Length: 187
Image 1 (cartoon, rainbow, N blue to C red):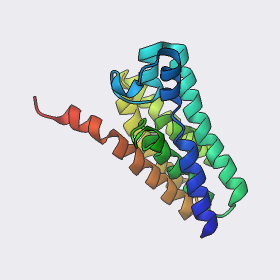
Image 2 (spheres, helix red, strand yellow; image 1 turned 120 degrees about the vertical axis):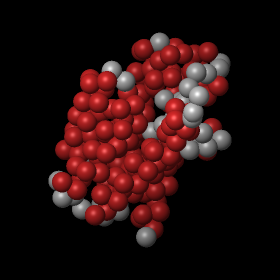
Image 3 (tube, one colour; image 1 turned 180 degrees about the horizontal axis):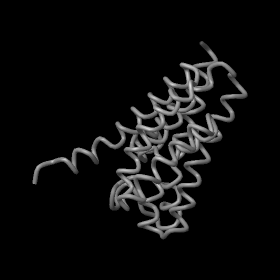
Image 4 (cartoon, rainbow, N blue to C red; image 1 turned 45 degrees about the vertical axis):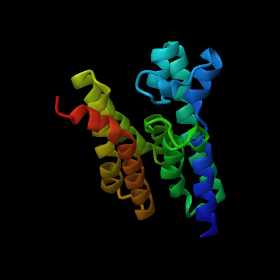
């Protein structure tokens, strides 16, 4: 039990490092959460500072997800999957930003690719399919959110991994809820 708590705390702490916020604050002195979409993610950073800074922000978010899972595997060989939703929750609800951060996509990607490369690859393929067909990220994200738990089940991953992926999808869905409400609001 102690290992599980430690892994969750580690994941949450790493996830809470607000990469996009720090980049925009450093480059402009502005709070990226007050600009455009209000997200701290790479896409909003790119709109504010350009593609290179957006990619740097996204890479930082992917890296913190990957590092959280890699460290958790070393610390708690049995309980490490809890790091996946924990790192994404830290990104989405960063205490450094008053519990308001990004939407968790890049961080989930980094965590997922290290946790299970086959599931990560299936998730990326689903995202790319949705994006290529529609030329919009939201359908790709929706497909990826469905593909991640489906692929863990099809690939017969352990139940702890399946629960971690389902919890991560729930965190990402919660992060996207305000956006979905805005889109679905009647005109």
